[in-house]
Length: 438
Ligand code: H79
Picture 1 (cartoon, rainbow, N blue to C red):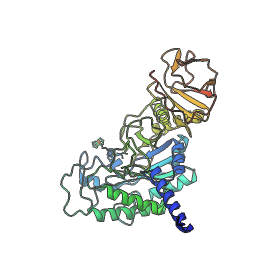
Picture 2: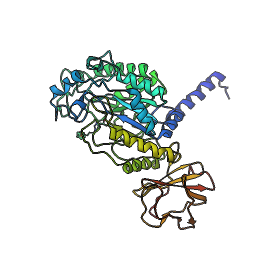
Picture 3: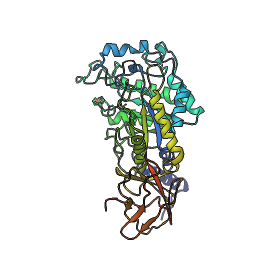
Picture 4: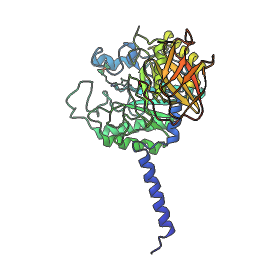
């Protein structure tokens, strides 16, 4: 038999390794360790902001709808958020238990919150005249919060983009997607090289002019600029909640809903604290219970929560919203062990409870008490050795082949989410998921 030269064998081995790596994560190229670290953070702050807040209507979508296109596109001339204080926003995020922050550097309306060299439609041409994205990047670094950037792939303002407002059916004959993608890549290079975002949150991938081929081109371009940058799945043409071989991106992004339990790929639900993404006066705000339920249920499904705040046109976040986040932070300071760095499951979450797990502990999040005994299905081959409320009293329990039974006190120790710790006789992080309705 002929001998293969050693160098040849090494090259083949290397190729095999590369191929194996690619197939291990077909949809993205970001290191698993980086994504695991991202998923350990569990809670981030989304911020939707721009000149449109002067009208109090929805960012992007109200252009050429509630606000005429002309009016919308002139708002930047009045945008002067003199009370904006990046440190305050980041401290609010931190106090709310948030570990990362994502700012809309550019939404569908095309306005840029940083001093881009590639369009005049940016913050330097407002009376405010200061770099918002830069100030937030700096403050995040100061307070040890991961800094992330939202950037949509569509741009109703840019002449190269084929559609100039929501509802434009006929592509503009003067449009040129290749030129547009060049412009987009230039802007992304600016953002990546100036602010070193931890993650890029794309949007707008459903638009017709945006193709899978552009998606792959931009993904590869970004990875070459920074191999570590995390990228959501809204470059590819697949559904937001999905991550599969056809996706381009690292994690799935269910919007305005809690994602389903999924142990096989990373995901993050983006959900607004009020109804609108951008600030609206007297917008309806979620209760503390709803917020905690949403967080515990996403964690229980093995996902992250990116909770959105819309700051006001003067640069402040609303007091009532800041207060709500502080309340969430207070809850997390008590119960954070049951959220951060946990895995979802093993029980499938529902309206009454969710479960998370770490090492040999299962955390049962009880959102309400229906009966005196709370039943769970048994976990084959695994036994409870101790049960107690997190930072609280022990609880009595029973376990047999049919079920686990937890005897609840007259009043649960936390009206929003009382967390029961079940210490098990072995590590439970890799147990298969168990449906509760048995
Ligand atoms: O940035 C936020 C949204 O503006 C953006 N994604 C999140 C993160 C988004 N773009 N498109 N969509 C969400 C889905 C489109 C929803 C719409 Fe509507 C239904 C657009 C018009 C009708 C929601 C309701 C927005 C305006 C009215």
